[in-house]
Length: 452
Image 1 (spheres, rainbow, N blue to C red):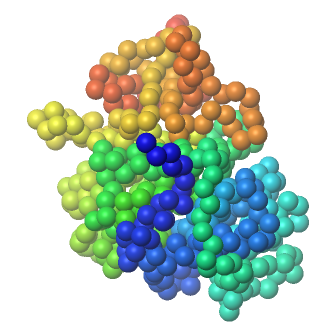
Image 2: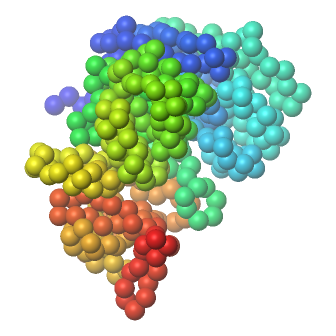
Image 3: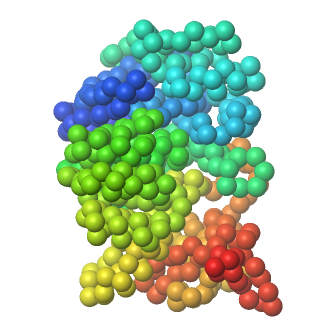
């Protein structure tokens, strides 16, 4: 068999060659719509990668982003990662002091940002000595003036690159992305993703029992690109040749609905709070969805009423999902199996409310405090452990020491910090966080059940 490295640049090479006229559509900060094709995007990504190389951004060095979902952000994803450097997406909703700490810990050499985040940049720049270049992601005629930091225009940076530059090949275990999680104790910890793990995750995310993506789809990721790579969608969409639609900063119900309808969106993904706003808008304005047929909802538990409303009133299938920054992020998705077709709608609903079934590549189990396996009976709940080729084995720079647990067979597992049940068909349901569960007389009592 040919030994070809699994590199993210192959996604865009594939899309540009085999889906050259398929569009990437973005609502820009200015409110207008930008559209171009996979062929156009791949050419600009190569040119940007060449410019970064000329600027001295080396293999393995980090380039930070503070940006919404848009075409330039995606170009940075691929230009940085495709040349062998590491794209470090930063959550702009964190406090500026925390953002500065993360930038310094990552030792970002360059930081690319949307103009709406200029106040954050001006607040953190004096405290981030590793960042040598601050790139404003805008056209030259929209460049802001700053008395605090010297800015480079994104389009002028891109123009410094060569248009004949070609993607290099290197070790697929090289790092490609860095995301920090605040879901652990102490300072945020970084999860460093490899090309290999990212490619495998994109394959799995596209599977029929996962996001079920294909070239027939028009995909709109509402989940931000600074939340675990928008759950892998910027990688999975070009893998299958799907049209991509980026909503930018406008995530209100009206703006999303208009974009769904004008671009023929078939699939989307996001957290429950965003869908509450969209559902409120379509209800108040007596709207229907012309093409929107399924959505992955994760980040927090999806309310049962939301699953029912999408299904019964708008004919949209909700795929309930669970994952973590440390899992790249997808772990489980709630999809029915053929044997469930005979169940009543209510019984099916109960299954779909769970966090779901693992996708190939992820293994999981529940254990007690002595790390003894617990039965998959749907009632026993214990600490949830996971393993797989896109699960981290340690945090960036070894922060927090070795997080993994070794079982009796010598296999290594990552402790999620969640307490869960798993039923006989392998459907997992989160019942609590490990730190919140109440232990009394050898019995575990869910804090959620106690509150209820």
